[in-house]
Length: 145
Image (cartoon, rainbow, N blue to C red; front, top):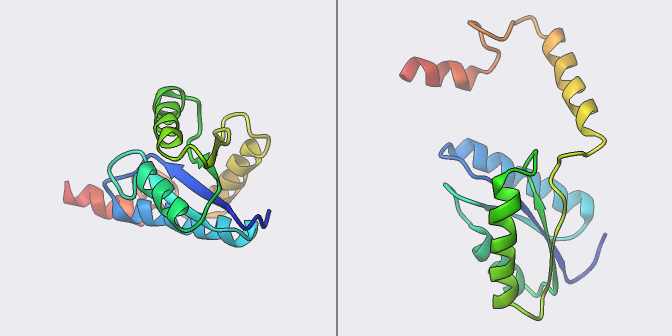
């Protein structure tokens, strides 16, 4: 990609769990590394920065083109209603910026393989998902309830 004035924003739902939001930030860093252009994260709710703050920061850093990549699996209500509204608000705020949204992950040809990779990982693991969940963070949170 390597466009000097392009910034990518990885736009996720947001979570009350800080570690989930940190994972989105980590993903944005990896996108930046692979795309060779700046990338940052933004959240719909429950975490910061929101999309408006991320767009404003990108513009302040000199972005003339911003591509928002939704980190959503399907074209649900957030993709059909919320994202278009938020993008329109930001486009009105920064009319000189080329603001675009990429498609959600729905229909992405690599998604089935990604799921099958996870199945393979689960089958190769000695622990069985269920009572002995192989998600230690989930086990510890379930004990706290």
